[in-house]
Length: 448
Image 1 (cartoon, one colour):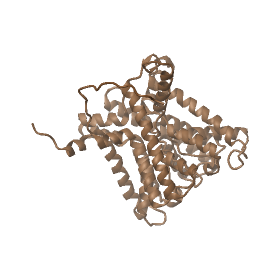
Image 2 (image 1 turned 30 degrees about the horizontal axis):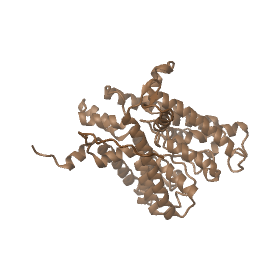
Image 3 (image 1 turned 45 degrees about the vertical axis):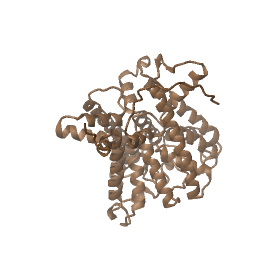
Image 4 (image 1 turned 90 degrees about the vertical axis):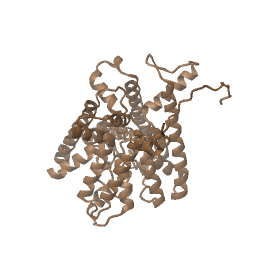
């Protein structure tokens, strides 16, 4: 019996394929953005191209240069394609191409695509992926149409320019990418409900996750039939957005640099928008750098939690956070199992939730410490930037462009790890799953 080399096994692991796919997209995007034709000045910069490509593929939105003025039309198109590819997922696109060319899907590709889309049920993968792509394109087209009309009728933009603005921001919003074509992001539209609510709706839908969205489309009138995933995702999303809106109203209501000059309706709209964007949207209608530290802390928490699983949002995901809450509640009540909506949460899911959260905390803490040494900025701003990168959010206090080369590399790595997921990256490195064929004696230890 011959033993296959570890390298062969390593190359076929679905997690490795996904990590390599996103890494390849980043490298291709870097090469394209580093060409002279990608910049308005005609001068390519590899570091700027690498950071921007990573941010686009990982659906983050952190930038070191102004997207509109630094990049040419070609460069902006490349960026749009990159966050569209990142949104759909490398393996989703690769599997679709295989379906078109060969008419069948191998088992290895099926497992890889299911890991990327986090399919709960082993349904017909072709049909699932086709629905994902169709739903994405329809939503992006609808958002682009609304934005295009608004730019033409409300701001006098020529049709061609308005169409490009609509398409760019529609794709960026649905994919939770956070890229905008104005130096102030969306601050100039702070009181425009057509722009703000349309983009916020796209961010919410894109960040719910495809399994939840498809289930809602089928059973939105029958909440009792919703799965645990849908119940936790929808319920916590409503609570986090509502709670975040109230928190921003309380902290920023009288801030002369943010909500202070706005009327009551403008304050409510801007607070709602500010509460939605930390799900991973990355757009802002208020100057983040002028917010109070208490608002930064609220944003840090919302960014770290993020949005729904199997969607375009980042963070540890609301389901992970929700499961932790139910685990704590069950422990406080002395229950031996974690029950959610007449369903028992498997022990493996509980371990995954704990692992993802702890890995996230460790990465954020270590990266914050390193960036404090590298950048010299204060803790509030550095922590905000690190969480934004890890949660693939894109909101910024403004220190990212001023950070050194080492800081940019660190933030790029955080964005990459945050996109493919700590557990996916961990399994890609570890690869082997060992099953223990015996149980060790149990010993009680003191906790707390």
